[in-house]
Length: 318
Image 1: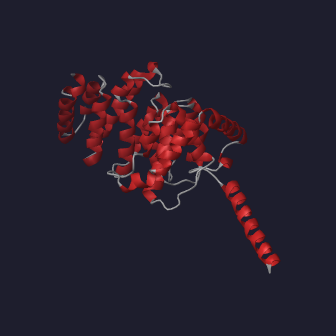
Image 2 (image 1 turned 90 degrees about the vertical axis):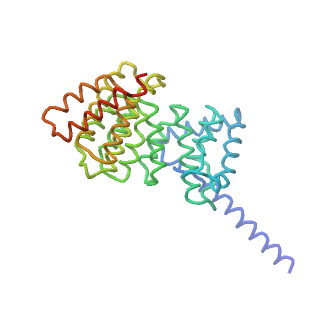
Image 3 (image 1 turned 120 degrees about the horizontal axis):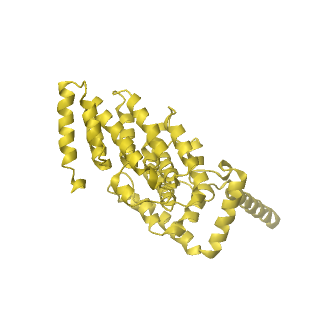
């Protein structure tokens, strides 16, 4: 009997051991698996994370602490999602490797969280990583966009994080995805306004010009992105990756396409175009308004008069 009990205990212990080993092997990130990255990239990233665990253990502890509070934050949130990204950003630049680790290598999964808590955690990790503008995140953001992941806010955060790096590689990825109809196009366009580079405007502008007025969702996304790319406030405080020599052309071209959108669209899209025009606040706007009046209908001319009046009284000019 004792021998049977011992064998039973050993069998249970063995099963538990196998389960524990499998859990470790199967452990993956909150958005990606390690295999999603090229082997050289994931090897180097894993090495950097391992080293950081020894030199900056407190950063990993603080990220874990934020994770432990996500469910409570979600239950008491006031907006759509809990402010997870803000809590992670407060950790500082050293957050980059702990959040990349959670995104790719080691996350315990959704468990009992609500859908909104799970989205807030995953998008928050990406947003916090992107805010550091650390180039080690570039391959991770691109892999997310290229992965089967379909959650809108996760993909939008990845596009925004990639855009903040402003590399030629990031620009190429974003512009290609922005002009490719599919399940991720909208999220990419909403996020790519963080990339203040001329090719972004040269891609989004013609896309806006050619989008049917009835496709309001796509028009709104492009209009918001152009407002972000040409935003005069943003250009007054350049970020790493911005190209100051491109500012005037970026903002003037953004204004041109936004005025065109204002004249041909109606309703929410026209209102959004007005808002973005005022955010860009480029002097060339007045010349684009004048050009738009040529051969315009009476209704369009009246709308342009209102636009000119709003632009000339723009609080940003004071």
